Amino acid sequence: MCPKCPFLYPGCGLRPSYESFQKTGKRIGTGIDIKPGEFPWLVSIQSHGKHICGGTIISALWILTAAHCFADELPPDLTVAAGAVNLSIPLEEHNPDSLILHEEFNRTSLQNDIALILLSSPIEFSTKKIPICLPFVYDTGTWKHCWAAGWESTSAALLILLFSFAAASRVLQKTRMKLISREKCLKQIPHLVGGMMCAETEQREGEGGEGGGGGRGCQ
Image (cartoon, rainbow, N blue to C red):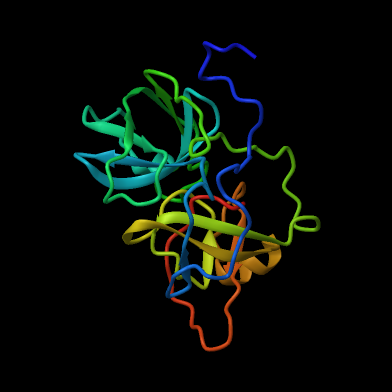
């Protein structure tokens, strides 16, 4: 391992500063405030200091996010904040160098709603800043449940797993999701396009779901 290369990290998807999940988180609707280090790959993409979209660290220089968050060009005031769960606390900010939208992104159907942000300088990985592991295969037969997390409202009965929610929260939250088949999803969303995956909240007794936007990701 190169001691002078902060962009190298021994493993993705690790959470060394987060011990184990405990059912003591503060609940707001169907969202639960997360603990520091629980989702160290999530970043807040901001404009003029305000959260506009979420993103995921996939390497020291690259952030995965949603294409619908941007116009065709990178806003000059954009920053990427990493390493924290509360947006009210000063965050480590990184300046973007360039933006790449999926060449077949459709703003009407949101098909191929994927974008990459290249940072001008690498993220120095730590226990609170770690890249996520990207899966090679999506299989609802193997993966039954996951967690969706973000700085936005996580109250939703059905989520299409994109990268932005509806209304912002200052504290990073999560909600437990159940992955559902494309056939079941088509019954709820007849015009579902290819390349999207669906999940629904696992409502507990006494909880009601609310319609909402799509989740940032699913762990």
